[in-house]
Length: 354
Ligand code: ATP
Ligand code: MG
Image 1 (cartoon, rainbow, N blue to C red):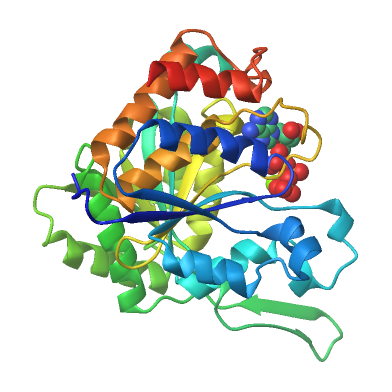
Image 2 (cartoon, rainbow, N blue to C red):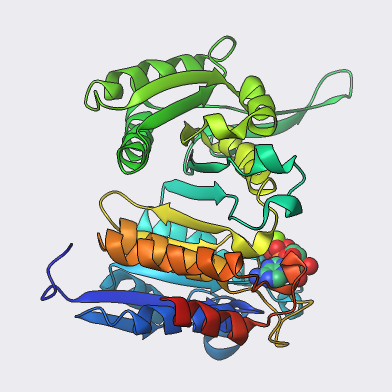
C-alpha cells in the first residue's frame, strides 16, 4: 500500500442528471474508508458548468483535474443545451478531458455478481462465470485516421475512414493490458483481425513483442468475429481482453449487456503513468434524475477502480467491491435490477457492509 504521507487528491466532477446523486454516494464510501491524506476537490463539468461558467469544461475545472491524481466523474448530458454549438454542449467535457489529459486506455470490467445470474440475457450457468476486463485503445484507429467523402464521376458518393495504428500506440495499450492481466488471473486475449487487416498484423506483432516483458502472462490471440461469438457462447474463458478502438467499442458494449444492468458498470480511462478518470458507463439518465432512484453502484465501483489504478490502494478497492457484492447478495437492489432500493438506501447499505 502507498505511503500515507503522500497526499492523495481526487477531483470529483459530478456533472448533470443523476451524476450528482450517484457521485454523492461514492464520495460517502471514499470518506468512510478514512484513508490518510485523502483530499477530495470538486469541479464543474457539463451542462452544470455551462450554466455557471459559460463552458462545459471551464479552465478552473481543468486546473483542478491537473492538480489531482485522478478524477471521479459522474455524468454529463442536458437536453436544455441541445441548441448550443457543438463545442458548448455538455458531452464536450468528457471529450475535452480525454484530450487534455492524454487518456488513451479505456478499461471496463464486466462481472456477474452472485444473486444476479437470472437478470442477464444469458443462461444463469453461463452468466455466473463472467468476470472479465476489456482494455480498449481510445486515441487511434479508424476514428482518428484520415477520412473523407467525395462525389465520383458517375455521381455516386464515396466515403472513407483510414484505420491506422503506429507501433508505439499499440505498445502502450498492450502494456496496459499486460499490467492489468498481472493484477488478475494472468490471462490476456488480444483481439484483432490479422487475417485481413494490416493494422491488425502490426497489432499482433507488437503485442507478441511486449509479451516478452511479461513471461507469466498467458497470451492468446483471437479474431474479432470469433471474440464476439465467444463472449456470448462462453464468456467465462476470458480474463483480460485487449483490443483497438473500433473492436473495443463494440465488444465492450456487448460484454456489458451480459451483466444484467447499466447501473453496475464502472469504467476507467487511463493516461500514461497512474493518472486516470473513473466513471460509470451510464449517462445522465434524465428520466430518473433528481428522484433518488438511480443505482449508485456503478459509480461506487468506479471509485474502487480509482483507488486500485491511480492510488495503488488495492486493499481499499477490494473492500469496496466486496461491500457492493455483499449488498447485492443480501438482496438490496435498485430499480434497474428489479428491486426497490433508492440511491441513498443503497449507499447506506454499502457503507454498513464496509
Ligand atoms: P446520456 O445521453 O447522458 O448518455 P441516456 O439517455 O443515454 O443519457 P443513460 O443515462 O445511458 O441514458 O441511461 C439509459 C437508461 O438506463 C435510462 O432509462 C436510465 O434511466 C437507465 N439508467 C441509467 N443509469 C442508471 C442507474 N445508475 N440506475 C438506474 N437506472 C439507470
Ligand atoms: Mg447514453
